[in-house]
Amino acid sequence: MYSRYLKVLLTLSAIVISPFFLIILFIMNCGEMYSSKEIADIQLEEKKDFIISASAFHEQNYAYKKALFLKAKPKIVSIGSSRVMQFRSAFFNKSFINLGGTAGSLKEAMYFIDNVILQSPPDIAIIGLDIWWFNENYISPDVDVIIDPSLYDINHRNLIYTTKEMVRVYDWIRNKKITLSEFINVIIGRDSNGCGIGVRAMFDRSGFGPDGSLYYTSIVTGQKRSDDVSFNNTKTRIEKGRDRFQYGKIAHSNYINMLEEILSTLHKNDIETIIFFPPFAEAVNNAMDMLGDKYQYIDDLKAKLKELGIYYYDFTNARLLGSDDCEFMDGFHCGDLTYAKVLKYIYNDDSSIREYINISYIDSVINNYKGKAFIPDVRVTSLPEIDFLYLGCNKEIYQE
Image 1: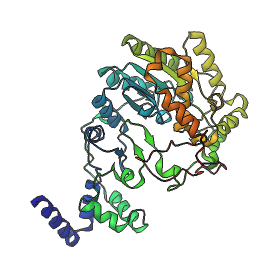
Image 2: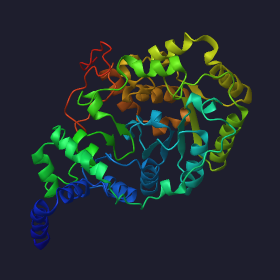
Image 3: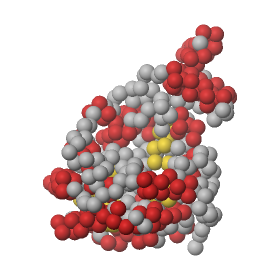
Image 4: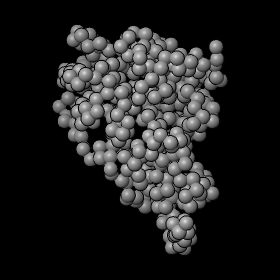
């Protein structure tokens, strides 16, 4: 009781003393100062509701995913960049954590595997390989990718906030992204961490679920405009050969050797490994194909992997999965449904993984949500998905 009165007293004092104190209290009550370990502990606590986490100020993806992994000790993981973040725990029959975002390159993937995964080896690792990781014009093979170990500190707290960051909160209120009543409710602790940790999670319902998968809630529901409408952003990257879509002739041997090392490490630790190339939207594949041999390194990579006897799934063309552009988040991030189709394809091809995959659920969502990027989940939002890429997609729920 006294702590409640004290908080009210501090709040009233803050109004008189400094508006910045109010903003700091708002930031604190939103959970923005939690460590990655604290966030993982809260999200994975069995009696807690479905809690999403996403900071509006700080990126701590490596530490956060590490904390989730060490807490859950899952049987299945997905490893890769943001392009594997749509694997959901509902797709599996056994414990799963999505480690997407921990690998922006093969070097980062190796580091995370060596320093995190091997602490509690899962049964299965599903690795999404970004094509550009093998292109010498993306990251030069002569450049030593320096990895900062402090980024993996799960106990680190974000306690320092600049004036610029605090002014952002004021701007949100002024622009009505956050109402004054919402701001006050958070300050007095009424809405603190009820359904989200971090400003984005609390007010957008966007961010990471307890399994580490990502929810683009504000975009798919139209609360926030996509930055890749009609895939124009991705097409511009292709036209200019930049931002992951650099041109290249060969897949460099240094990177292929690195992949072999990763696969060998996982094999030695009895981790069954599935590797695949994530899908591009059809419009993006067409734009790349129109440039002829500008992306010759892709064919070179696939030929070299085949020659080495490295088995992989090539999902770069989403048509193989029966997906279309309406099921994408942007030009090179596909949605939930397409990843359900990825697992359906692997399930049919590889009997060793079947006991891990919840095929009845996967069949159900494939049958019922054709053309959707987001599989409806009332724990996340009750708002419907719209045609957020402005492709002329019919987002009405389809049922057989």
